[in-house]
Amino acid sequence: MGVRLAVARLPEAFMREDHPIDRLVAVVEGPVSGSVADSMRVLSQELASQRQWVLGPPELFDETDVRDVRSMGFVLSIYTARPPWGEQMDRTLDRAHLGEVKELLGEICRISGERHVTFVVDFAGESIGTVYEGRMDESLNFGLIGEWERVLDERDL
Image (cartoon, rainbow, N blue to C red):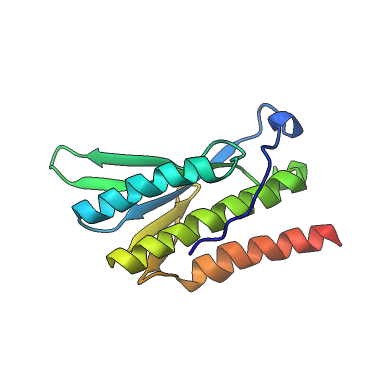
């Protein structure tokens, strides 16, 4: 079960217009079965309706390349906190983005466990971990989520 946090829609006025946006991408590794595709479509609709997202709900993509290989996953857009932009990041928005990432990854864990599928997760164009057998690997659990929480907690001191 994913983390469900109620976050009011936060106005983008907190951020500069030219503040860059990164993307968290979670893609099914290997073939996509019909039951996985169905679960992901349902999840996409549920995610869109269950909270207000800072830059919009995760977008579902379902693409087939010229070799007839199907690629399916979610893309979540978030304001970058990478240098030098991190110091300009509004803390309220940064916490809201963390909640969004935790919710999306929690739901991906659920699908992974129920449908026995692995997801590969990229952030800002770099592979950062996997969700396998319903669990985030250490790099996602501690490297992404844990470190993000630690940085936010230190800022709040």
